[in-house]
Image (tube, rainbow, N blue to C red; front, side, top):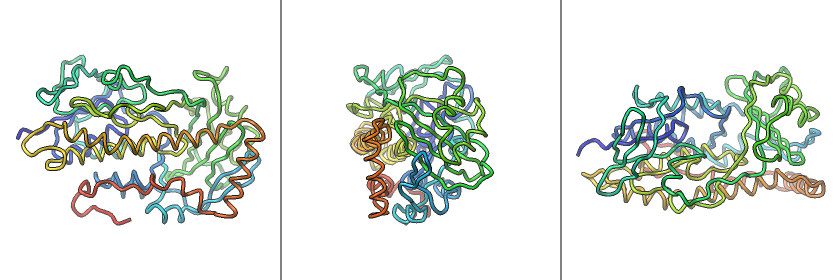
Length: 405
């Protein structure tokens, strides 16, 4: 059989993981990215043990685990600095079989690209799905330089996915979640701090260490969609968070306006009919955009990519001697759609908790969190049961790389 060919539209985390996983399975892969350079959107990404186990499929899990920076305690605080609940990194790692790893997206992108042959990723190349293909004909992707025919096309082109709109033009797409976010990566403040997330009235702040000694800071606040600061986003952060507990003022003092990224949050409130059509599969935000409140957006994209590659293996979802992916893509939808939409809904529920603005509701929320923290310290981790403990299909692991943790 001729080597099967895949075209990936979008060189984000999900698209690059899919390309690396398919390359390991013998596919000829081309990644088309419209941006001139691989400049990841967003500052940091949190990889939970579920994504780390998925990355074991491309021999990248241990590289990511080595970047774990969180050691010791941390937890949830109020704007005045009172701890509502405490969490220990070792306890979380023991429960879910691995550490929580926070790293810069650029670091992860570099690691993923290192698993691909030179020339696979083509930047500055806008791509359009011209024909999704069918069992008897290949899919076609149009670019300025001509068309690509492929046995498989992967739409990994993000929350505003043009591939999704081509496949499912009647779907309403992502919905605004009611809040916007800011993110920045800066040098660590002089004073030591414990990693924390702080919940206020319709606002949150998080300060987390990176392995390279820098700090990833993020914030979210209830706001109308499309808003922008009248001056600059650092000034907006000072207005919203400048009087919160340390190290928030120290972090803000080290931030410059150009460090701050601002994005409105949207999520897929209504599920797609499927994550495939013809010879095309959708993954990541193109399929199931979610609020970042459980830190699972990139994790689920990585899971998607590894499960898709698994289903496309000969003898599993791909009949030996053929490159027709129909059965494999149907199995991919059956596997991924229920799981990812469950994570979408759980993330949306958490978002509603952190965006409460009424004083009585916020007081009750904080009291409940504090009570749970005192009476059942490990209960907060249970919200990640069924998510962080996920394991990929066993055959996705290369020989000698399967982990028991």
